Length: 161
Length: 392
Image (cartoon, rainbow over all chains, first blue to last red; front, top):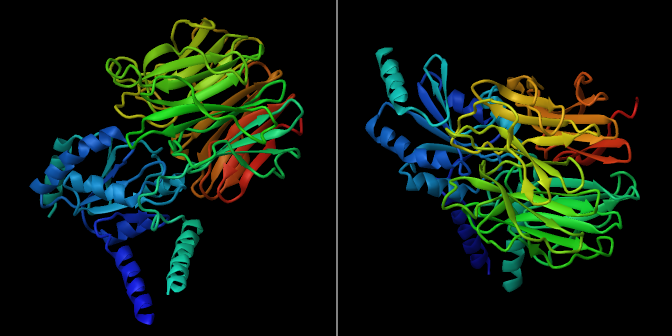
């Protein structure tokens, strides 16, 4: 009886931890955590969404860039106006070849607050890409990103070494 | 053993529910579950009863209040079982009440995971105690979403929605509409008023007269420019010319999930409010046209683009036009309100009429007699009905 209970609990724990590859919950304060974790690094933050068709079409291009540029430190944030199921976010990134990339997903319905923390001037349009250099300087690419511009920016970051 | 297993499971499920309801609504434990709808749409009955249609994850719940929203009746589900609600940010069930007190409820469901929807209609003849079996608004099963319905002064029910029946030739959506002769009659033939509209933005709807609805919508102009246009029906089945509200030049391949609002004042003037991120202007705007024929005037900015201004709503009540929208001040979402007593030529300074520090539905306007109210569902405060301009 006791053994059965323990086995059941073990199963439940397993079920909740066997979700590797799923996005981290992007909540109030998450942006500050991301910024702190990447302090001093040049990062590319790509804001996308399951409910955004051009975003889905763009994902494989990011995967290609990610393969081609080891200097690309990519952070994906699913910023749907209504929080989406983690499993679907993970499966979509996985299909696009982005399963191993740092990934977050809006997990709070108070999207105005989440957007404000990322960029006060952002009304939620997707896709959107933030190129953040080591000193924190930002370049915002609205809409589908011109990856030539991202490559040139990455080259520029290297030159600053 | 079995009881023990069950109680452990109950414990686990209980914990999962508690997590889902704490302040930040973590998605853990909600894997695979559809996102929730979170809407409340109001309507007043002729006797002053406030009716509310709530959109939740899997139900449309109808309740009423005889004390202006302070207390509500036990909600009644319009469907016998759970449904797959369209949770699009601009989607909501609607409730209408005719002069006899009969209720009409319209709502959209998702048919699949590709956001194909189906709009249903039901009615209640017994004061919301029960609802007739829901019927699709149109026989075509391709996709309908973002229905907007209203009853004209002759008692006919008009509904417009975004429809994908022409998907082979129209890459986006079409603006469709239909009429029903009365609250308890099925909708008649579907007509298409415009092809190539944006796919996920709500419609603005107002009447220029009986049998003459006007619809404001985000159109797709050549070059994937998603600016607004209004179309007024010349008669019940003849859409007039498309009138562009403004040239914002918002070239975008995506749908912004942000639809407009339309009011027509007693003098026949048209009033439009909308969101854009165009190359010509960005943010939330208002424009006025003196009647159904002439061009709209220069757009007026309602807010600053760095306040995330969104979700405008216009309502003409007697000799007054009310306008509300939502902004974010860095900590709270606030509802701003302006009114005009001269058919939109001049407006009062914007004032904050409600605030919340968590998630919220779009602010809506509803009127009983000459009194306009803000109707707003927020996660922290619940449902609120706030009288506007009561001090005047």
